[in-house]
Image 1 (cartoon, rainbow, N blue to C red):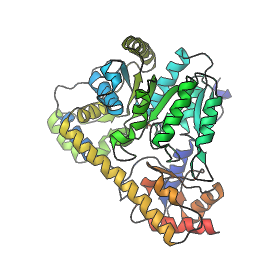
Image 2: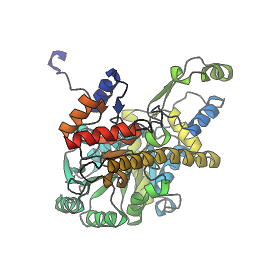
Image 3: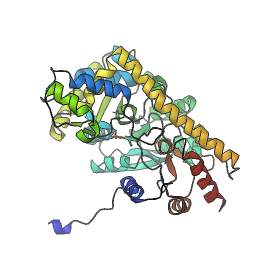
Length: 427
Ligand code: PMP
């Protein structure tokens, strides 16, 4: 039957990266990709992760045995505490459980599959308009219908609170509502505390289910607690919820660490462990669940384990060991928070430099949103035709919706980038 299978379109972001790589112009800039880069535009291995790597390589008690189905408890608990706060009433009352997932995407998928099986039949999932492109695919894959709530308001380049509240009010009771915990992707626009309160009011009234996606904790404001504020507020208000956590961005654990990247480490590995070939799968994520009672929490965990068993049996060890080590060690944890500040600080600096340059060039339009938005992404407001010119004339690559990743800018290319924007906006 394979003859029936049509060719699918390439993934938009990965296709963009391929086009960028093939471009030979030295001025080229890639602001499409959602991975952090340092000021030399190189992938960044967090110093604390390097340290954790070295500790793990030298730990002779570690082996390649199966992990528990839900992942190591030390890892899932530390991850849950990171988002909820160790003093969360949910912990005190023993109504938090968690399972390790294949990064944030896996957390979204496992949560969605669970909801399909156990949530009110026919419930829809409301997604912000726009949202991370994968959300719709993930929910559709498990058979959950999605609808959109207004989020981005082009006229203010900010949040469409009224539209959002109206849509939540109109949606059928007990809908699933996907909320970005912080650093909304792709807009970089987060609700204020007062706005979160209004969102919680409607969600409470309509008995909607909060589905938090948290891919950027510590990466947005630089403060792990501040970035967790919305989730903790919803817990305080007594909601039950899912929280999908990714350690891709905040630990720089995007994919796989292989021999070619280890370079000079190879010798050390050979000496200490005798291994000559290492491919270390990372993809560390966590699905944290807050229920209303301790018994419910245990029931949910037991069903999540059944689901996990049929999907991946056991989660991969390596990335979670790094995260486990860092979250559970005071000195490493402190160092991690410093590394986070390095990343978020550079992003904030790029926002400021871009904004200043556009102001200096007197580029038509308002550009305050560049510095007001938070996280790695900024929704510039550039139109699809402008994006096209930026690519063809300036070798600047971004997604069609005008979203840019601040991590693609550096002290060396930010002026060129601003001048290119200035040109396309004027012409
Ligand atoms: N949710 C959002 C909103 C994201 O931006 C991302 C990363 N692009 C993810 C989830 C998951 O990413 P990962 O699977 O790499 O952890």
